[in-house]
Length: 298
Image 1 (tube, rainbow, N blue to C red):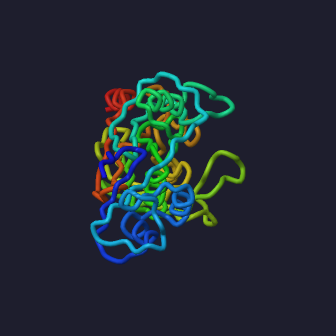
Image 2 (cartoon, one colour):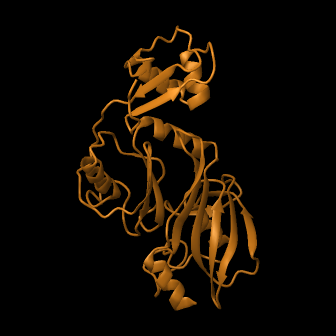
Image 3 (spheres, rainbow, N blue to C red):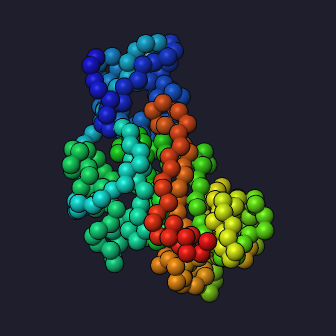
C-alpha cells in the first residue's frame, strides 16, 4: 500500500496480534469512540487495503489507513500574513499578533485569523474545516492552535481537557514583585456587578497560576506565568489580586502610556504529537509592542 500521510490520511502499522479494530484505534492512536463510529460508518477506515470490518481480528504488522473526508468551511478567504511557528499533518501553531480577532463575530466579520487561515488552506489545497483548539482574546498575543482534521482536533482537545498541555505566558505587570517564584491558588468566578469581569471569590472555580520573575525593573516586572487551570482572564485576575495588575489592561487595571493593550503574550506550549506521541515544545517570539514597553519601563 503506497499511501502518503498528510492532513487527510493517517497510516498505522499494528504492533500486536488478535485485537479488535476499535480497540487498536483507541489504545494505540487514542481515537475516541465517537470519531471511530463516524469514520467506520462513512467507510473511511481501510484494513490492508480493503474496507475495514470491525468484527475481523487485527494482527501484528497489518496496516490500518484512516482517510478523513474533504470538508468545507464558512469563512471568506482573506490574504493575511500568518506567523506559522509549527506545522505538521494535523496541526498549525500560529503566533497571533495583538489586535487580531480569532474568528468572526457580529462586530468583526472580516480580517480575522479565521479568514487568514481560510486563505492559507485554499493556497495549500487543504480541504478541511477550520478547527480552533484554543483561543486568545483580541488583545492577547501568542500561540493559537488550529487543527487541520478531526483527528488532530480530538487529540489536542483531549490533551487540554486532561491538563497535559503545558501553557506559559509572558506578562508585564505593575510593581516590582518580591518573590522570584510564586503560586496563586485562588478560586475565580464571575463578578456579580459586571457581566464581563471575573474576580477571586470563595464560590469560584479552583484556579492555579504559578509565576516566576524573568526580569525585575524599578516599578515593573516581567513574569513567566504558567496556568494549571483554564479560567477566563485567569492571569489578569490573579495578577490584580496579588497587587501586580497587568500593564495596559483596561478591564482589570487602567490604560497605559507605553502599550495600547494588556501586556500578555502566550509564548510556550508543550504537547504530545497526535501521531507519534513525542513531547514537543513550541515557542512564540515576544511581540514588538511588549518589547518596546519593556525598553521604556526598564
